[in-house]
Image 1: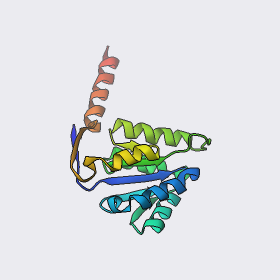
Image 2 (image 1 turned 120 degrees about the vertical axis):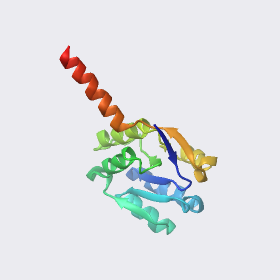
Image 3 (image 1 turned 30 degrees about the horizontal axis):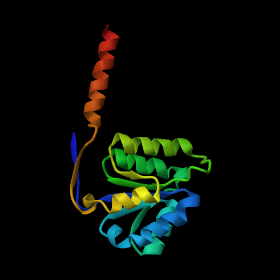
Image 4 (image 1 turned 90 degrees about the vertical axis):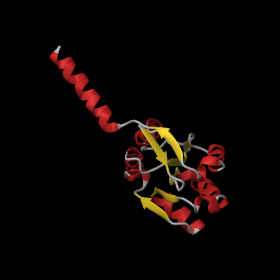
Length: 157
């Protein structure tokens, strides 16, 4: 199914503890561009970005307390267009399964995702930041119907 991202994107901002300062710095540097979009983030990250930039950032729960899952659900519902997630690959995360699920759902729903500053710089400087963008996403209802039909056929056999 085709989905068109609007000119104003819904961007989720997430950072592991050791990467929060880096994400906040990146947001300050890109404040003018980010100000043209709708921002949200998990717990402390959302608060820190909002305080440092003065931009409105809707805060969800902290990542380990379900915030990663909340953001993932919004992605699955088509309510988030882009994920900027400064992850720390050198530090073990107690909620690693949630993080993997968030990355997976971002891939399944074909949204742009940056896991580091370089990728975030490429995304934010893209011509699509202030233009509509059409992409293919899974039609979850059609997918569920097809799977149910296949399972029913397997049972009948």
